[in-house]
Amino acid sequence: MEENKNIEKKMITAEELDAITGGVDGWAGLYEGPWKTVCNLKTGWLALRTAPAYDYTNEIGQLYNGDAVQICGNASGNGYIWVYSPKLNKSGWVNAGYVG
Image (tube, rainbow, N blue to C red; front, side, top):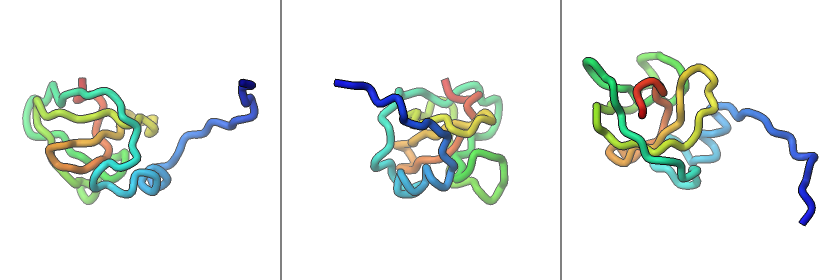
């Protein structure tokens, strides 16, 4: 089988990822990545967000130390990763520094 060398690779935007995954609720169609846990939180919670940036209006859930998440992507380039939370039955962006 011949390899196609003309495939262009590009980063997708949060909006494009949202369209692919069917929104922030559920995870149909997402890449099945490794399972990790939320860790290293000194106080409070890790916010699950609709966009890969801090903004109090984009918080859609709260995760705590020990909560399981599935890594689905890391397209933000600014320290955020796309995860699925079975606890919340939602997918969204979290700060990668608190997932391990």
